[in-house]
Amino acid sequence: MGIADIVSGIFKPIADVVEHVTVSGDEKAALQTAVLGGQLNAAKAVTDYEQQLLQGQSDAIKAEAQGNGVLQRNWRPITMLTFLGLVVCDSFGWLHSPLAPQAWQLLQIGLGGYVVGRSVEKVAPSVIGAITAAVKK
Image: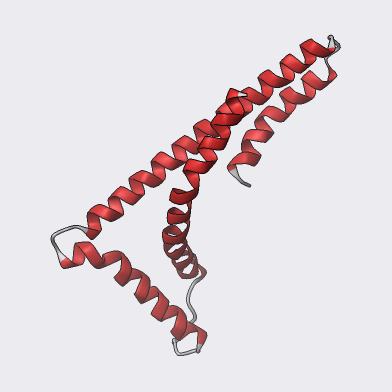
């Protein structure tokens, strides 16, 4: 379930009530616009928060990469390469016992964090711009 689904789920009961309110067409349209504006504002706030969270994570990774010690700069790549090696060994049956599901999840999170984090950094400004433009209308 994505953030958009959560925000929509919060505002759906309100939108349903507005749909069944017996007022003039102009008043109903104004109410629907207000509900949609609230939904867009909530979505923008969540998107802003996620962007700040990703920026903080990105800053931490950059600080580690620019650190003084070799281990400080390379512990994440070393960890991920170790898990990748374990996955390859597991795939060929070279391990005494198969990897636990948690190891697979850790690898997915580790690799996904780099890919998704970078993708969101590139896309987030466009999404925020679109939401802001929709709210201003």
